Amino acid sequence: MSENRRVVVTGIGAITPLGNNVAETWEGMKNGKNGIGPITLFDTEKFKAKLGAEVKGFDPQEYLEINEVLRTDRYAQFAVAAAQQAVEESGVQGSVEPERFGVIFGTGIGGISTFEVEHTKLMERGPRRVSPLFVPMMIGNMAAGMIAIKHDCRNSAIPAVTACASGSNAIGEALRLVRHGYADAVITGGSEAAIVPSAIAGFVNMQALSVSENPDEASLPFDKRRGGFVIGEGAVAFILEEYEHAKARGAKIYGEVCGYGSTCDAYHVTAPHPEARGAAQAMLEAMREAGYTESDVVYVNAHGTGTPMNDVIETEAIKKALGVEKAKESYVSSTKSMTGHMLGGAGAIEALACIFALNEGVIPPTINLNEQDEECDLNCVPNTAVEADITLALSNSLGFGGHNACIAFRKV
Amino acid sequence: MYFDVIAKIVSERTGCDVADVKPESKFADLGIDSLDTVELIMNLEDEIDMEIELDQKIETVDELDKFIQSKQG
Image (cartoon, rainbow over all chains, first blue to last red; front, side, top):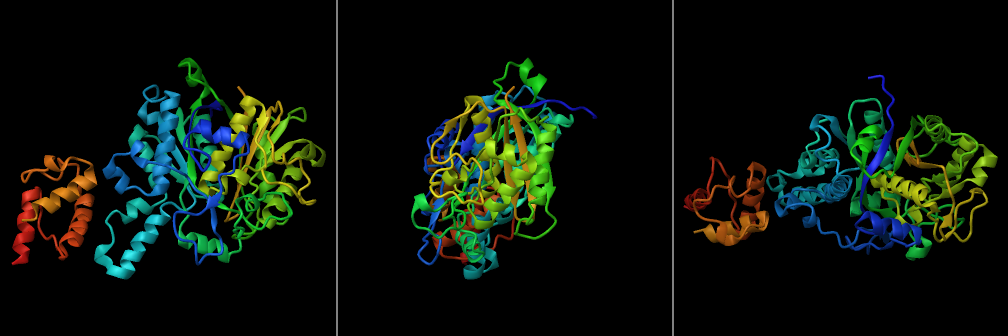
């Protein structure tokens, strides 16, 4: 198994704050649509943070039978739905042996809404009222497990749980499975549904969330006015497939996943390393695997959360990885300005942004970027998409725990 | 007789038509597995306002109905 096979994307699915399919999600991004609004999933009266980027109009019964819906947390419902879209579009089902078909699916926390509901029952009505489905609904590997059941994936089926880097780590680990011959196709991506009172309270008290009540002045990556991220939710899924296999069956090929850097700051539980040590190293490794040269025209889909610290440190990481001059001439945008921070789903939707940016030659913007911070002195594509014939797209994801993941994409 | 309320809950949990639930229907055939059974009992407790300690194997709707009646004394 010393192979080094090429790995391509042959299907994508999306349930996001910008739309419940891939086309609406990408059109939204390209057009600078803001997916942020007042939180409707619970009453925020007692909470300082009022805004979220919720998935809207999602009907799980389009993807699951009613009895399955009742035993599936929202995060896993999103994951199963996105995966089904991706599998159907790719046509991969049946062309790959079940034993060669895997799942690597990321989530930051898993079924936190189930946890809250059942814990409330425990407190209010005692242990005998806690659902027997509590554990299977809550655990963070259940999205991967359910996707494997739905699509008969009998290879590795495991989650990536690296906080806000989960989606990117999932894609990277899936890349390695296929590249090194352990599987021929893998369903990958990330999902999150954590817009729940306990999570919002914790993030607010950590001072990580924007407390703005104006959706156009809340998620403000690279802007001087930024004061924290806006929580988002949703899932994006991909079919990663070995290139020759995809070509032989005449599959539609979106692009190549050609590099992965995975590092840890080994420094602090929540704060990034002050010199962006791990983030820069992850970028460099992804670039090396992708065969980066100075002639590449680069787009970086930044982690860009809009917290005061992240955006400055990430600017430093990009400069370290590309060199200051190249960093400044590259395109860098944060689509979290539109999608909010989908946590474990973030790396996945940002991979979607990279793939379409390469395919269409359009860089999605950082919306509401009106007062760019001098400390984030990169080409941050403010407010409107720009056309650019990029040759390499990099997606950064940085997570609590010091996890850094960078994925590199190219056109085929 | 708890048949009607059991049938209603089965229908809500499985999406089947209430009319398709018969006394002799097996829960397994209705798509209700062991995990669902415990949830179904909890739903039932709320509907009939009574604690149900299931201490024997129940396979059909009628068996559950009779079991609850027996516990009611």
